[in-house]
Image 1 (cartoon, protein in one colour):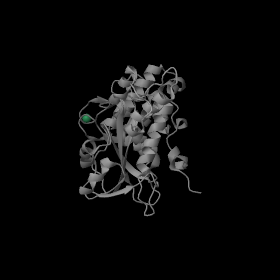
Image 2: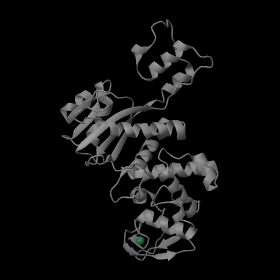
Image 3: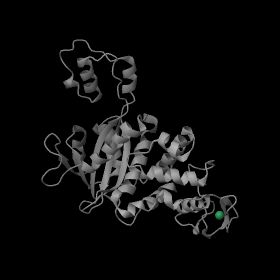
Image 4: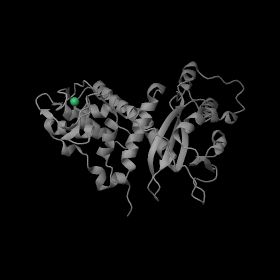
Amino acid sequence: MARHFTQSKSYRDFTLSKVRTEADAFLCLTELAFGHSEVFACPICHHNGRHYLRAARKQWRCRECDGYFSPTSQTALHKRKIPCLKLVQAIIMYCAGSNGEAASQAAAILGVDPRTAWLLFSKLRECFVLTWDTSPMEGTVQADGGYFGGKPRRPNRRHKNESKAIGSLTRGRKAAIDPTVKKWTIEPWNAVKLKKRRCVLAIRELSGGAKQGASRTIVAIVPGESFAAMQPIFARAVKPGSTLMTDSGPGYTSLIVSYDHRTVNHSKEYSTPEGINNNQAESFLARLRRSEYGVFRAMRPTYLLDYSVSHQIRLVTTICDDTRSSSRGFVQQLH
Ligand SMILES: [Zn+2]
């Protein structure tokens, strides 16, 4: 029976049971950061070779330039105070969380202050953002947008018409506002929340093989699914001439000038008989939605990209069913 990659043996190559001591964790962190635990390039002078281990200091000394460095040198985790063991355990937990990992839960498991866990996860997300591959995609690409943040708070006393109107307004369905409500005003606190609403545009490149899923994702934060907002993103993220699959939203129609644009009408079907769909992008946004509701609880516009990108990395490490493993997928991102 076909199984998802997260249920396969190759996905379980990076588990808590493999790292038990501080020395194990230091070598594991070295391998994660440099791709090898013995021969690697010095981050200061870039000399590639075997360097001197300073085990007591948990550092390496470069054979060429005599500089001292650690696996987290020149990364967002530079000058960390947390031990290597807890850091590796936190990385494993973050990579294994299919819908994100809550800092409060990690704090209880790792035995650290919740603020420490939250800061550590924030720095991991920063690592992802700094090393994100945003080179243009080609081949078959799927895209979709989803709105995150800015969810209005319901009133103390439920009023059927107001609730419907707020829901319609937040989704941009002005025509759906109940016409029987003569004078409708939004509460000041909900007006503030609505300003924090953003659209996450997910663009995913298909891996090519049947049922192989997507191989790479680029996300962007835009005000809405309008052509003016999305066109610059597509111009940078997708090579002209590529096959682009989206839903039939009006903001995508003008993309036919630059791409082989195919659309699927979601009011009729999820996928056309010819196989045109944007289900990979829908899948990405569905997982991010689960992260928002179930784990992170709230994502402010300032760090929405961090949450989205780190979610993408986890997906990339999750769905790849070739020789890349979850741990090696992270290696490439920690640099
Ligand atoms: Zn050096």
